Length: 124
Image (cartoon, rainbow, N blue to C red; front, top):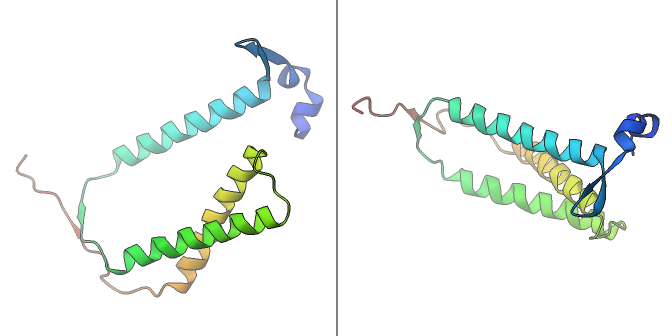
């Protein structure tokens, strides 16, 4: 529990959902995640549509990223993370993805004109 939950009776209040007591802060956390995901989906849908030719290195980039992400998760399990601690498992996987993104991006050389954006046909 965070600072505000410990000091706010409203956030620590429990609400019955199908006869199970669920803390309000947990419900708000899930709702904020859903709202954030909807905002991201909306933003992606607002982006202009372009065809992009796929670079050969793209597949290896994502494979490296996933491997690093899995390694981070395995290290966390080796350090004592329990599978039933699903919140920590999810946070560890997100951290692993971000660490992988950072490492692979730093180690991948940037090539000029690696991806070519081609505007969509304006005939429709």
